[in-house]
Length: 281
Image 1 (spheres, rainbow, N blue to C red):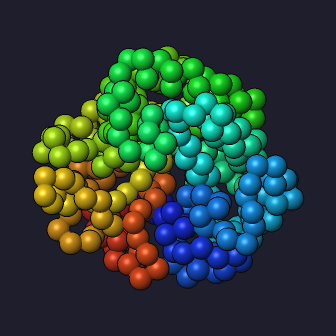
Image 2 (spheres, rainbow, N blue to C red):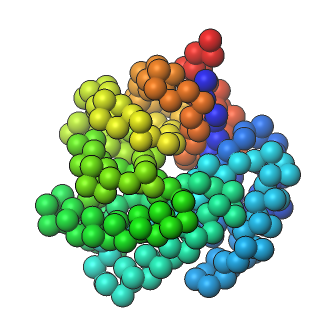
């Protein structure tokens, strides 16, 4: 069994009250909440957070039965402008400090790219880049440890932390209970390796099953020698959900699975598609 949810902003931005009403109608119980993407009447700029603001958001969502599985704050650890990188770090720290008041244990991010637009840079996959990333991550994990908050790091093939092995290496170096994994298996796939998806999925569970806290769920199709991300159940998706759900049943019962790339019009189809692979026994 799983707890199925979605990214709140995929339903469209609005006030927190409007968001809560939309989420209640979905019958889904958990979300990833990227504040400025999902709530458009509050300026979530540095310095605007307060316990009162966070509690207002949390209580409005809780009144409709909605849990915040992940507070999204996807920063670029590797931004080439060090002043911009520092701003990113301070923003992330603010999310760490207030995460629990927003109702979240986990603040989610990825490792990022030396390109400011997050596109691939060859340097991302070097040992130098990984070492530089670790320095920044240690700073943020130290902050998370102070506030008993978890950083959920998501591996992405074009970024610095890009393979199951790199994820395991990162966990070993940091060695903190406040660093865990948001697993999006498709983010670890590319045109070069998608035919080995079963091997890659299994390797994730072999290497760090205990550290997986949340799953991101989407699908992909292969077009023009590239993989294109789509919503679960859209078209002839090639992702092996049967294998993923078998592994989740064995290793992570009742984990929160958050759908991506859905809309207000398509989330039901995506939810039905995913649940068709879930063995509820």
